[in-house]
Length: 107
Length: 122
Image (tube, rainbow over all chains, first blue to last red; front, side, top):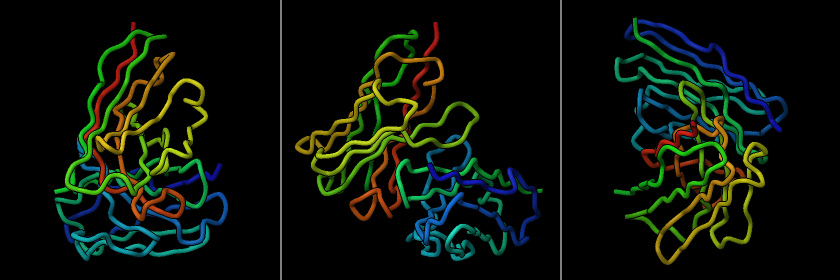
C-alpha cells in the first residue's frame, strides 16, 4: 500500500497569512494526488485534483503543486472560512489512501 | 444540483448487520465508478470499497474484506453497502462518493454525500 504522510498535523495562522501543507507519498504517484477540505461536521469537498488543477468553484487562493512523492497545498491568504481539516489522497494504486489530515485554525 | 444522499446508518450490536444506501440525483449515475469512504469519530478518512460502473469489479479495504459487500442498481441510481459481522472498530460516518472521470484509478472523489453514522456497540 502507498502511505501518505501530511505535515504539519495542525497549524494556527492569522487571517491573510500564507499557509503551506505538505503531503509525502511512500513511493512515486506521478501527479495522481488530490486535496480535500473538510469543514467541521461537514462532508469532505474536493479542492485540487491531479496535483495542480483547481476544482470549479474553489477560490483561487488555493493552489497545489508537486509530483512524484512530494506535494504541497498552499493557501495564499488565509480566510476565516478556511478553518477546516485538509486531506491529501493518492489515486495511483488501490487501496486509495489518504493522509492523516492537517487541521487549520485561525488565530 | 448534484446530490448523493446516504441512509441506513444506526446503532447495531457487535456481530450484527446493516445495509447502507446512497441515492444519486441530478447527475448521470451509471457511467461512474462509486466508492464508500468512512471516518471514525475524531479520526481521518479511510477508503472502504469501490465498484465499477457496470459492477464488473469491486475492491475492498483489507479491514472490511470478507465482511462488507458493495453493490449498485443503476436503474435506481443507487449504491449499497452490506455490512456483516460488524465490529466496534467499524463505528464511523460512512460517506458515498463518485469517482470522477468515471474511474477511481487516477481519478478523484467528487461529489460526496452528507454521510450516515454507523455505531457498533453493545
